[in-house]
Amino acid sequence: MAKSLPIIDMQHSIISDEIVKSLERWGCFRLVNHGVPPSFLSEIMAVGRALMELPVEMKGLNVHKDKSFGYIPVNMTSAMFESLGVYDATLPEDVDHFCAQLNLFPHQREVMVKYSEAIYDLTKKLGSKLMEGFGLESGDLFKDWPCLMKFNKYNNNFETVGLTGATTHSDKGFFTILLDDELVNGLEMLDDQTGEFIPANPIPGSFFVNAGDIAKAWSNGRICNVRHRVQCNEPRVRYSVTFFVLGPRNEKMETPSKLVDYQHPPLYVPFHFEEYCALRTSTKSIKGEVLDLFRKK
Image 1 (cartoon, rainbow, N blue to C red):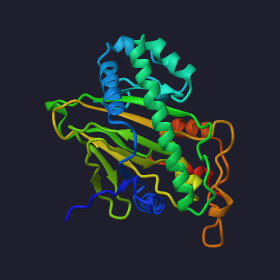
Image 2: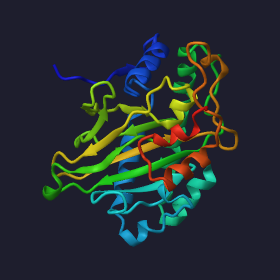
Image 3: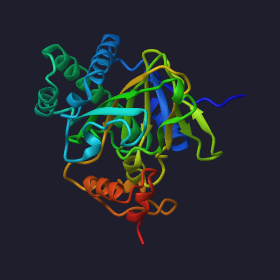
Image 4: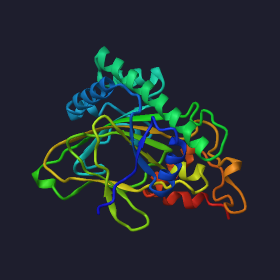
């Protein structure tokens, strides 16, 4: 029987335990009954498609000091993949800056703001449930953390079938909330125990949530920073919208003291998220290997 990735229903009463178990074993789960209105999902996907169909010279105006947070053109990381970035999607001034870069319509900006607010609220709920599941005092785990929203396009065609659109990597932040293409699949998650790639099959109206490097460090190594890739399985363009909860804005990333004990000695020294990103970029290490540089001696 083929393996399938966990599905979590936010209406269940034991969601805290389900989240912890899923993240420890798989580093990911699909989220249903999450409370974000379906109209928000269809509207943001429509905005994403429209933006990704803009001329390349227009998309190139989306710049950021960290190149991975702005426009990523085809061939920079993949012959198929390109994306636009909104950093920080939780701040009105940053959204305005993105809208000005690409000359967005007022309605498109309104959709982005509504969606960002809804997803940020959802991530705070997930963070609270995660803390409960680990036996920590529930609170706003991601208070003032920057978030990156990306509109993605995989330019799949007959010639790219069987190729990789996004090479195997882990995400650098804490959580990634993915609104995936309901019609065109391709996302696969690596099972660390077997070395197999498991397809993250879409479910209409759901989100796919995965943990990144910062989550692994915060949890003292208990959460899996799942490695994943995107394959081209059919000659149809694939669109998606991702919302990355990154890391602390000014404070250092540090493991809560309650997650450190005799059986779980501290694995990582405190570090700044920007420092981590810079090392990951300079070493061209995209599978979480940079965490080893912050291990306690």
